[in-house]
Structures are given as structure tokens and as C-alpha cells.
Length: 200
Image 1: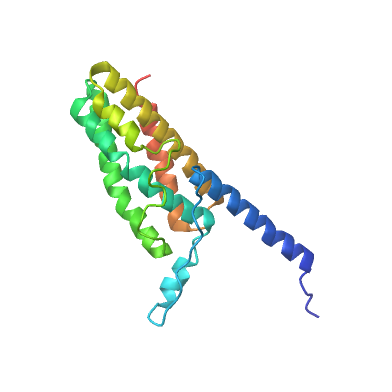
Image 2: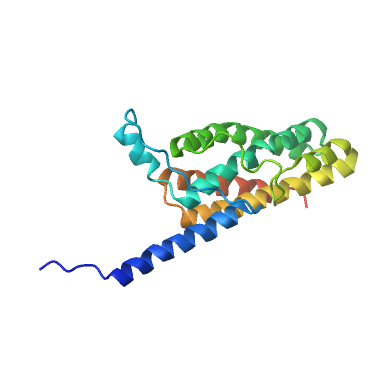
């Protein structure tokens, strides 16, 4: 005779998953506006493979992808400033390498965002949080010069890289999408290596 599942155990498992997802989404969002868990609503023209692919995304995956796009995009001007104005050749080279990494990574993030059915607009616009370069921080960097500019830029880059490492670790541990977790592993590896090369 087939045994029926214990409803209390099933409920406890569901609640545990919900609590975990909410905790990680809040950590990833970090700015008081956690990402909303969204899945595309299937239409008559939606393929079965597209629906199945979208179902791979859990709350942590969605929050990570949604946050990583502005994290990457808003650092690009900092990398360009470093390439143009830093006096340390090693720092200029690192900024150039990272620019290439971000240029390759952003299309992958946008593709994952589209696959997951996330909106194109940036829900973190204007937010202040660790590692996310806001307009004031960028203006301060642009106004700096010489050693002061380089110190500010290195501090900004270190904070950004460290935060990406923490976010990637959360996705690797708690994510459910194999594609998103694979990208998070790449982020953890590249950002950790870059952070180690920053001047002290």
C-alpha cells in the first residue's frame, strides 16, 4: 500500500524553502528593495522548453541576476576612468582586463534575465548599497585627480569586487539554476583574482 506523505513534514519543508529564499533575496538586494520573484506567464506561443527553462530559476537566482546587471553596468565608467587616468601601469592593465570580463558577462546576464522573465528596467536605480557605484560616487571619482583619484578608485573597485564575491558565494550555495550558478562560479573566480591584484 502506498504511504501518504506526512502533511506536517511537507509543510515544514515548504516553509524552510520559503524562509531560505527570502533570506538570500534580502541579502542579495541589500538596498531595502528585494527583487520580486517572477516567472513568465506561459502563452499559447510559449514553447515547452522555454517554460521548463524559466522554471529552473529560484528566488535567489532571480535576485542575483537582477542585481548583477546594474552592479556590472555601473562599474564600467570607473574602469574606463582607471584606464585613462591611473598612474600605476598594473592598475591600468587590470582595469582593461576587467572591462573585457564585464563586456563578455553582461550579455550573458541579460540573456538569463530575459529567459527568467525579469523586467528590462533597473529596479536598483538610485539605490545606495555596498559595491554598487552610484552617481555621487562616480562624480567624486571624476572630480579627483592624481594620487587622490587613484586611491578613491582603488577603494571603490575593492569594495565592488568584495561585494560581488559575497553575492556569488550566496548564489553558489543557495541558487537552483545550473546556468546561473555556473556564471556565479566564474564571477567568484575572476573577482577574487582581481581583488588580490589591487594595490594595498
